[in-house]
Length: 372
Image (cartoon, rainbow, N blue to C red):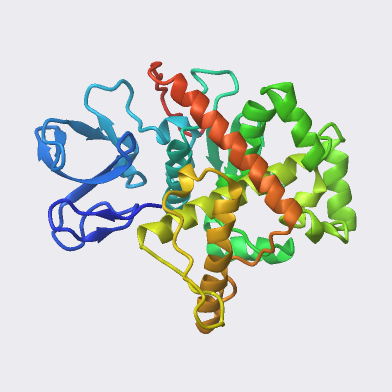
């Protein structure tokens, strides 16, 4: 994540800020410019200080204070580049659901920040039958009714909003013996399944062949593989070639976990670069500092990312331990895992370049449905 500042007073800003904490200026995010801008009202529209000739309106979800993204005044539709992918939202007649939805949207907008930075294709359901869409739902009140399962199905990502409750999410993390479980992690993992369909399954045969060489044959029965994982636990040697225990359950899950970690790595390195962090991880005298990765989203290869990531994780994990907190990144990247990360890296770069060549095609917006 890049570093933002208020164009009115120079105050450093967080991506989620709705207003500047120093001067009080209203803020809005312009995805096309990758910029959080200070804005002033002009009638029913808003004028950015950094581009006085432009006019914007807020995404309709700003009415619920779950989005701070702007829509160009002459653009079709009511929703921003992120919210136009929402299909179902929680039932807002329950006040607790609004708080959960806000937490989910904070994470989901960070996901879209990365997807847009990479230049990845982002078709909606209106543009493609398997376009990217989100259902964010609560479990039914009837205790005998089926629970909402977080997952992906042909472009539709479903998130159980109970994950937005910290205690519930931590309970599930411990129950499943996971090292890491966050809302942003869920979104990054599930969108990995979506891009497997778009970029591997629907890509060229050579990409699918290389995937099977690294991750395994996805034609293995998925339901049986997951049931075996839950019944018997992960394979004992999973750490040798997988980023997590769950990744060893099936090639699809291995890819989605690897994809999620690639996004973790790139965005965290982007934040480190924005703050100008440089590290000296060696205890020997005279060891040169490791500079930040200038633009992780445009890194030429996985080796450059790993050269910056390894000392950064050592530093941040040590900082967390100094505060009595668990490691920020409690994972070991074995050589086979780095090779898989390299596969994701090349896949994303190729997709972004292809999308750039096809830029200029119009994008349709669609309405957001309230839950039934």
